[in-house]
Length: 146
Image 1 (cartoon, rainbow, N blue to C red):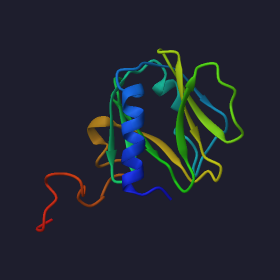
Image 2 (image 1 turned 180 degrees about the vertical axis):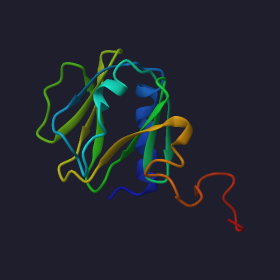
Image 3 (image 1 turned 90 degrees about the vertical axis):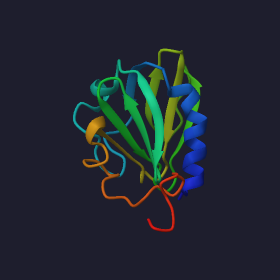
Image 4 (image 1 turned 30 degrees about the vertical axis):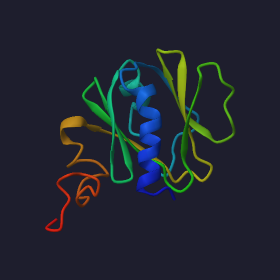
């Protein structure tokens, strides 16, 4: 399972591609990962611009212009890669985000332990999988008293 430093490395790799990009289309190549995708998942993301990609513990959080945050977890074997929009999908490419830039961000997860969810951005810390997590170890607020 990717640990926090690996998840932060993924965030740093994806941020220049995603931040400021508009999602033109979302392709789900199956109906679920570890659990089903939220209702209208594709429609709620398509057309939105990614305002910021951040990390909270082992979760990646993409704040969207629609007011939702895409909450993602790599699970045991999940990974992202950036491809040209016309790439040929691989066997375990389960989610494809086609961007207005002509690139695609592809989520590949052979074991399907990954998670993708949507939560209102203003409530993401209270109403999503990140609710109730302890202090962020890389933040300046983390100290001996925390």
